[in-house]
Image (cartoon, one colour):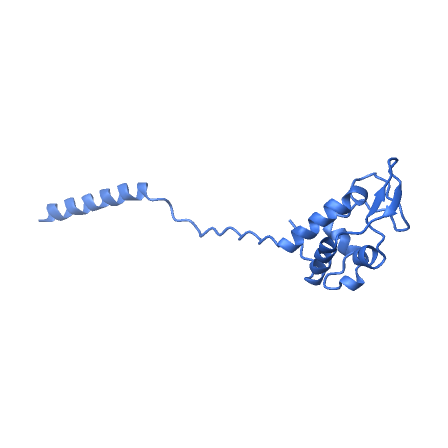
Length: 142
């Protein structure tokens, strides 16, 4: 009887050893941070700035004309906020809206030599996108 008990215990130990080799070691729960949702309004604002402003105010080294300080960082979100070009939540206080909507001085059209000629206006939809983006708190784009 004692021998049968020892044989059963040995067999159980053998099964436990075999089973433990097949099972993965327990791991701490690994949680990947959830991806940030894409803010569609922020992406549309980025597209407006890229399409209508970057040509003069984004390309490093390109001379920008006009009475404002030349910019070569229009797509630099942190710089837009730091310089108060965009004041989140306050489109009426943001220089970007003042220059494009109130003064209507940007963007400009250029002649063959690259000098500014007549001023053109942003489309109403593009202007509204920038205003809505700033009203919403100017969320960061990707």
